[in-house]
Length: 115
Image (cartoon, rainbow, N blue to C red):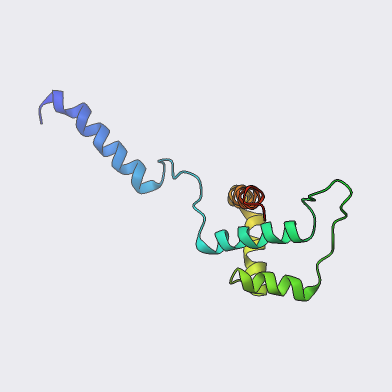
């Protein structure tokens, strides 16, 4: 191998090793379909319970179990999946942050649409 090709070969080898060992930036976590559905559920929950009140004197409402079950069904979620996702968000704050960004986006879209 010619000496002038060694630096290029070394860079290629190092890049390959870093990719194989995961040293390259994997980026932020990507939300899966369950995360997206959870964000939809959570934004509806917040809006239906009055946590994001439309008026200053509006008091938050505690949703009945049937209302929560209906919201879960609307977003194709069940209690087991809800529990698993909640536990995963506790252990992965970055993913939880992305879910919250989706929740904010859903709420803004509904507010802009007049719902």
